Length: 377
Ligand SMILES: NC(=O)c1ccc[n+]([C@@H]2O[C@H](COP(=O)([O-])OP(=O)(O)OC[C@H]3O[C@@H](n4cnc5c(N)ncnc54)[C@H](O)[C@@H]3O)[C@@H](O)[C@H]2O)c1
Image (tube, helix red, strand yellow):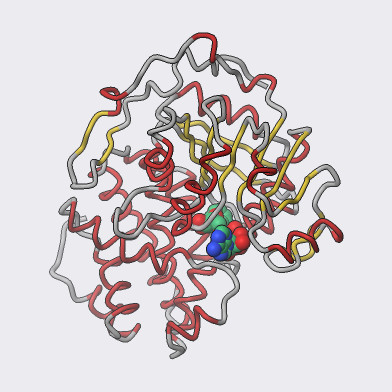
């Protein structure tokens, strides 16, 4: 796989701009402590992968990554689902129709899932990251690498998933955290259809090591140091996707969709750059790539929410009829709060917020976007 991931070399020594929770940027370098040489670890010989979260995405990742890791443990929240998965090798709730490879061990116990883990891949919805990492804490240690596949922001704190993970772990260790994101419908990944995505960490050596460890014939990772751009792209695209669903549900055409995607990208990019991310990241797989997928693909849950709203269904009714999470609904609140905090214009997010929470109609939301004061591009 790859060498050079030694803790003593560069892990955790990135210079990612961080937010202190009050809208101020702080440099990460100030709190980096050198790592003892004897703790040096490498992903070169990494064998044990623990996946925390057995929804659609966690299950698909278990399937596509299983050929790369001799030991794969998949933690599933629902006890009954975990036992059925052990027997049938299928996740009949979140990803029916796909078989888990025989060596993927399914468990409902975090202690079992995390025992001896070298890479901890967390795949829970964004509102559960803090709770689950607190529960995982007794079973985690400094030699583990953490990879977050969550897309979304924590409401209230407005933190990205990787920041929540760092915040929970920081009193115990200086964790090595990377994020993965991109245009990745779970079903297509589980079917080994060609998929490309990004792995990002301010620590270049870490993202390159995860890239080498996770890449396979149908799963190609590009490495980046911009976890801010990658996580903001993966989060805000779900908000724009609700808008794309609205357009489709109202019977509007391709002109409107193309405009929404383009202006959605502009909005995502403005926010990411204001937060310390790179504009270039947003034009890549974790930005434009994922935005196009979510705004045009029928498998997108967030787009489906928009379609249903445009058809006149109530939000509560739509949410309660879905087994799976539509991250964009919660992320809309965080997007609007971040726009205010960073003084960035995010008109699509604002109108989605008004539509989801203040009852303006889908048609009015689109009309308001068209009637804003005229701007330069
Ligand atoms: N599905 C995809 O195609 C895809 C692709 C990329 C990223 N993601 C992201 O991955 C994350 C997980 O999404 P998903 O699609 O796998 O979820 P999902 O909607 O398929 O499943 C929901 C998950 O939440 C878990 N859960 C529910 N209540 C819980 C609780 N109280 N405690 C712990 N776990 C609980 C369920 O067990 C299940 O694993 C999200 O942030 C999503 O945006 C999904």
